Amino acid sequence: MAETVFTPVLEGIKHVKTENGEILSKPFLEVCKHILPVIDKLGTAMAIVKSDIGGNISRLESKYSSDPSKFNLLYSMVEVEVEAKTAKGSSSCTNGLLWLTRAMDFLLELFRNLVEHPDWPMSQCCTDSYNKTLKKWHGWLASSSFSVAMKLAPDRNKFMDVLGGGDIKGDIEKFLATFSPLLQENHKFLASVGMDELKA
Image 1: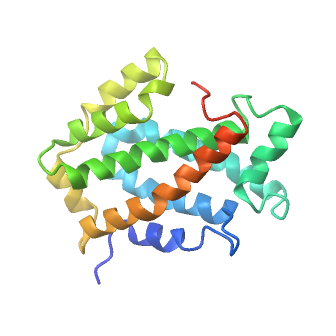
Image 2 (image 1 turned 180 degrees about the vertical axis):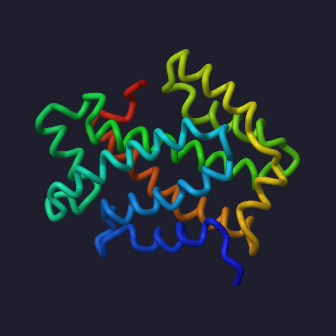
């Protein structure tokens, strides 16, 4: 079957959890990395999102690399910071995971809109997903630059074409179904340590 840009993402998602259902650091971050080329296809409109996601992945990766056995499980990085009372710092891994999860929420909504609203232009798909996810956490400045970026979104049909041959709609639906629960789990965990409501 023809591959789409989602093929490596869908493959990676299968390896994110331990047998006990805990999220592993490295495989989760690998999946997020595989999503970066998908964002590239959105062109300059999403440069801001891509650099944000890339920066948060790097932050979490370097923490993981500092002690792979200690930080084998994704939430262990947060637990260490919560204990040390450094979780709220802007350069913390907790903050990194929170904003990485929020950016992924935005992309998930964007792809959901593409599948569920075939008549919407790309800019509408982007704006709607932004309003549902990131907007409430952003200050005025971030919000304004996002609004400008949305207007640069590529043509919808062109975007769907560059995502690759094969069953792109089917792959998006699989991605939504398998990745969404992982993000929900992140939010649930972050809420349990009082970190899910931090604003920019």
